[in-house]
Image 1: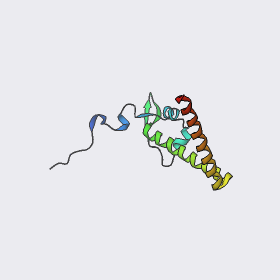
Image 2: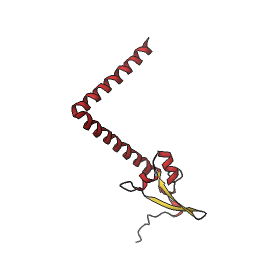
Image 3: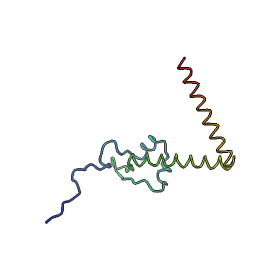
Image 4: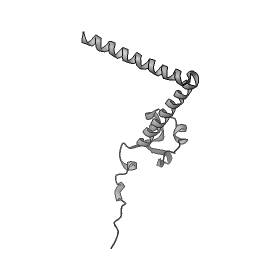
Length: 118
């Protein structure tokens, strides 16, 4: 009894072989507003494949990996911003600032709603 092979000939449906799922590193960086240094120093690292066009090698990355990296970097920036504000204002001051910002947004939304109901 032979076991079935799970490999697929002809490219399969891997994201590496599906149109629109990958891009060159430079194009992906431009698309997501990242630098090549951010990508190459990412932890965990972003996997890439190397391809060649007319003898010139270039890295290819999955766009889903780039989107995930962008989210991680944005989350880290938000955490750093929060830590800086807490260091500057203290925990109570930070919570008061958040409450004030929320109240301002709610007041602005209520004003817009009242304007449209006239």
